[in-house]
Amino acid sequence: MSSDYIIDQKFEDVYFLEADIKFKDYENCTFHNCDFTDCTFQTVTFVDCNFFDCNFKDTKINYVSLRGVQFTKCDFTAVNFAMTDQVIYEFHFKDCLLDYAKFYALKLKKMQFVNCSMIAVDFMASDLTEVLFDNCNLRRTVFMDTIANKADFSTSYDYTIDPEKNKLKKAVFSTEGLKGLLEKYDLIIK
Image (cartoon, rainbow, N blue to C red; front, top):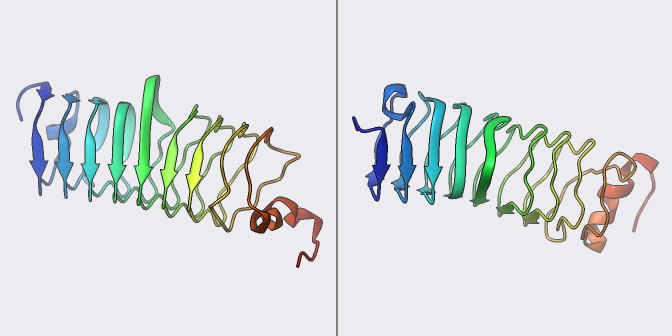
């Protein structure tokens, strides 16, 4: 992996070291069952890449560009995304573990979280406009000063969102989810 620009490569069962990943550009690459836990991502670009069953747990992600990236069945426990590059920014998660991840103050418009565990995730001051939370566990996830206009929470569960401290215009919720919107009022909903 000596080249700084890697295109159309498949990586399977690779344990990446920090030197393997720093200052690299990956385009149209696929990663299966790879482990990035010892990496500090610094000035790395992923364009049109797919990750399957990869481990990013506790990985440091600084100045990473994610453009057209799909993560499936990956572990991002306690990863801080706050320093990711937000220029031409698009990535999505399916069947991922995102517990304790931080998305503080990011613009995540139209992002998709599908079947993800998102316990105690930090979305404080994030733009979640038109984000899809499809069947996600949002227990103890922090929604404070977020813009979640047109976001879809209708199939997700166990969330608490204060409508007075977040922008939720035309956001979609299920009837069962109303409890999470009214929790601060200590009401009994049957």
